[in-house]
Length: 100
Image (cartoon, helix red, strand yellow):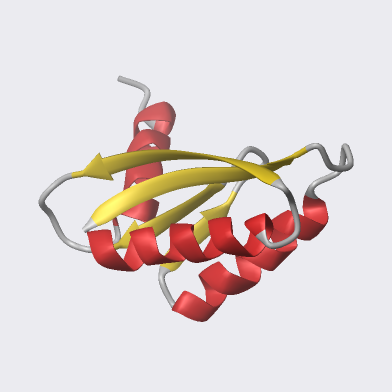
């Protein structure tokens, strides 16, 4: 399982990209993969092939509407069970609330 953060930016378009993000979020949700939308990108968890297919599908959807697209991808590839997307956040939150 991998955790992947990606962002897709259409170049030469409007300042607001929310309609592009919404289109990509529909693709991510349709995939059924665990995900989280953030202010700066989208985080998806799954197998390498599943996640890369989602990133590609999102990229191509934006590319259909824009003559140039910049896609940035960060991958955390680590052996372990599914569910790291929420487990990573819980681990940090536990440490923040721990008075030690």
